Length: 264
Image (cartoon, rainbow, N blue to C red):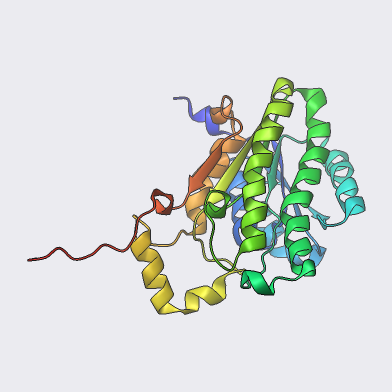
């Protein structure tokens, strides 16, 4: 296999929600593979550290203010990137949020916040990027989903609905835009510690229970997603589209806490 299949030199990638967490890690991984970046957040100051990390890798980084719940903000994204770079090769649709509550306590506002951010925002950001990709007849769109794209968990009803929708949206867009040379895939992490869920990892008993259910016996670290995001962004995945790639340590196998064998 040619190493050049994974080389992103000369490519331009947008990563939304790149100020922290997995988005910041995706931006670093793509920069290491050779891409120049447009990185987004709702506030430009929050992108300073990500920008510095990318530039330290010898790549360009363009900070862009983006609120995916604001149609006008999405409309400004692509022109800003095109003015700076002249093209868009890759979109990592990462911006997202979550509300953890029992289903009977979820409010109308909670539902709208999560679905508008994770699903509506992802669609219209992908649409904007695709309009720039279609004339060039190539592009890579990577929608960030979750293990909840295929599993449901109590206390996460709006989030699970949004991530299940991400998976279905990915398949629809792959069918819609494949004829234009654009691939659309969903990268679905399992249990990774992020700013959104850090409080859960303070419960040692819960972490032990979680690790028992993961065949690899640990939560994911940001570096565990580097290879997957570069693969989906690169020529190595040229014939992969409409797929959901679970990077979850195997928890989607349905593993449960093992019972001790009698007599052992």
